Image (cartoon, rainbow over all chains, first blue to last red; front, side, top):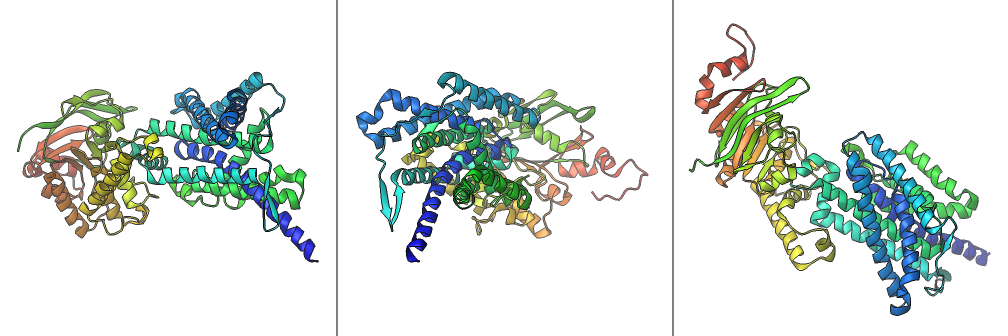
Length: 309
Length: 263
């Protein structure tokens, strides 16, 4: 029965790599939720829509600039992703200014309502600008080749996607752990009052968080467009919820936790869809969410959050 | 020693709801001195500190620091002008290491921003290395250099207080405010704290402190300001204050009222 065994293994590995690629995307989005929560104790419900904006801006730039034709597909896409990150970062910072900063001293619920409002606003704005139908990313940008590893064929795109998310997450981790601004962000997340007394401008820290999180979310949006080929104005809702689940799975407020939670959720979902039922794919994610909330409300790496409060 | 006035409070008033926490308090702190702010619990001492560091806005009165009116300024601005403080209840960044805590204190004296950090510019790296040297130096100054990578929460209570002092010193202050620095310290730790406070002054940093340990206050302070129910009731040298009738009454109650409190 050797060939069968091989096939079983192959299917497993295929789904595992797929899960990691999708998980990388969840992780990138989850970082935005978790960083904002860490500093403001606010769930930015509009974050999923910033992700959608990233996907649409990526498509617009891809079609209008023709960069990929001039400097090659790979380099063109890299430049475009950086542009999308920059643009979505600016939108994120504007969102904070307009929707959250005026409510900084109000009860927390007001900011949550404002976040939901911003989400509805973004979703409808995208629909009015781009229309309600699915939009399609050009599919001939990158060679649709696959490489063979130990009899396993993995699409190049999947590897690129996973690699890109790992690079961004590592960059963020080093930034937060090693630099002056990163230390300021961590300090403000622990105790804003004490951080101010270290001369840290907490408003600026909050702005940084609203630049970095949306930049990563926007990049994830474009990556989804490239990977799946089609995008829709409501996609941010499901991805946002999944990433939010991932952030809680890892321990909300905890940056490595969001990365771990995202990858883990991607793998769980992918394997669940294969071995249990494809139709249950989304349900599996939310069952995971419910189980965490019951068994370990602080998340996998979330102990630190608990003693922070 | 020059008698340059570093901090001057005039008619400082703050009330919370109907409670007058600080009422028309005026005093000056001269550069290079160590001044103690004392008084019974609830006298408004910490409120005065919170007013100086911009945590509260005064209802009335002004705060001049180094010739500038700082009342109403944002806390991080006040810190960058050269005021640092520690807290009565320790407020370290508990999950961060000792060194990282002190590094956070270096923040306002560094200039590099978010983009420099991402691009890893050479002078940026240089500045970060410099900050680590400063932070390590401050840890050594308070005697906590043996475990720079240990998380702040794992330090003993007394050492957490010293770590807060190191973190405050890393902001390069001209003026350091210590809120009950000896709280929770044993005799041995208190003795080394007295030495550290004197050394801080010898570095040219003016110190204002709240402390209930009268032994420490009398030993280290050159001048005392006494608050009771938000009102300044006395001011002078430790020797003079010890004999001041109104101070004795504030602590022990009016004559004939037997309360057990040592002063």
